[in-house]
Image 1 (tube, rainbow, N blue to C red):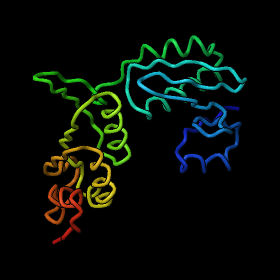
Image 2 (cartoon, rainbow, N blue to C red):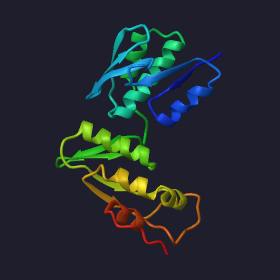
Image 3 (cartoon, rainbow, N blue to C red):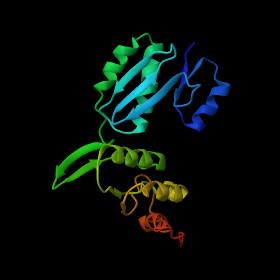
Length: 199
């Protein structure tokens, strides 16, 4: 008796075929239920299912945040919240800690902290930085988990090429025992296009 609201991720869209409830899609395709008509500089135009047009003004940067906000708008509307009211509330959302969090500005440098450690998150965060800030983007990245670093090595390296400069530290082990066969050096080499040499 619910609803499944799907963003534009093609893997998520595969869920629609087996959904036991109505499905609403959010994205830029002409057949999406909630269509992102335009999005730039924190302002997005969303076409609603009833052929209306609503403006979203977001304080958080990035296309991924526009997509997330449009999904929240769709859910709020399904719950009975007037679309204009939901859009007004979304405009007040300032983000969450450790996700594109402004840490300071000095000497013309803006420092942003972001917990992105999956390639899709890294890509989204760097794209948001390009959208919001002029100039060079320097990413200081600490890989998270030995197993994830090994499994997503090339995808992580590809994501980091979205920065002008990528500085890679050693891996944060978190809950895993030390693995001497994978290191931050492997990520840095992959960013430079050097095939990884595993011990």
